[in-house]
Length: 358
Image 1: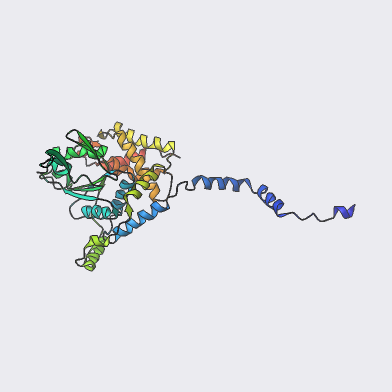
Image 2 (image 1 turned 135 degrees about the horizontal axis):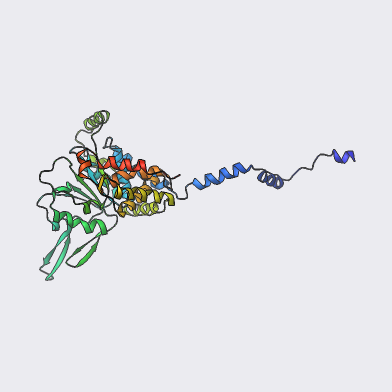
C-alpha cells in the first residue's frame, strides 16, 4: 500500500497540460485580456494614417510650421466639410491650401473673388450654339473637386449667395436644371480679418456652411528663421513641382466612409449636445449654434480619432475640434464684445463648465 501511495503521478499528455494551463489562468488576467480586446482597433486605420503622414511630409517640404492649420484641413477633407481660413496676408493661407490640393490627384480650381465678380463667373452660363440653335450650359470653375476661393469676403452678397446651394447640397440649379458636383467637392476659402475696405461681411447663413473657421497666426521666431533658410535654399525653384500626389479621388471617398465607421459612445454624443445646447442659453452669447454644429463636432472628432490611430472618439477629440467649429457659429452680446471677450474664449469657458463623461 505504501508503495502505491508513494508512486509518482503519471506523466500528463500535452493536451492535458494545455487544459490545465487554461483552467489555471487567473481571473484577473482574463479580465485584462477582455479589456485590451475592447479597446483594440476594430477598424484597420493603417492605410489612412500612412496617407495622412505622407501628406504632412509632402507639405513639410515647403510649409514651415502651421501644423494646426494643416491638421484641421486634413480633418475637413476626411469629414467632407468646407473650411474658411482667416489670417493676415503672408501667413501661407493660400499656399498651404493650394499645395494640399496638389497632394491629391483630383481637379483643382482657384477663384479670386473681386467686387465685380458675378455669380455666372463662378457657376457658369448658358451660351447659344449656332450649329444646334440651342443654348448650352458652360460650366464655371466651381465644377471641380478642390476649390480655393481667395478673399471670399471681397465679392458682393449675390455672388457669395451663389455658393450656398453648391456648398450645402453639392449641386447647383441653372435654368431649372440641376447639376451635381462630382465627389470629392471641397471649398477652401481665405479671408483677411484686418482689412475691411471694399469687403462684404459673410452672413451667418454662409458661415454655417463651413465646417471649420481656421485662424492662422504669425509663425514663431524659430519658425521664421527656418522659413528664411528654406527660401534661401530653394532659390527660384518651382515649389509646386516638389509636391507629389498621395491620394486619389477613390481613396478619399474610401477614407471618408471609414471615418463614418469610427465608434462614438452615447455618453459622448450627450457631451457634444450639452456643449452646443449651452451656447443657446449662455448669458454671454446673443446667438447660439445650430444642430449642424453638433453634427460637425461629431464628424470632425471621428476624423481626428482616426488620424491618431483610434477607431473610437475620446472627450479630448471633441474638445480639440470644438473651438474652430463653434467660433464662427456664435455671436457675442454687445456688452461682452465691448469688454474684449472673444468667441474662442467663450467656447473654452463652456467646455470647461460641461462635465466630461467618464
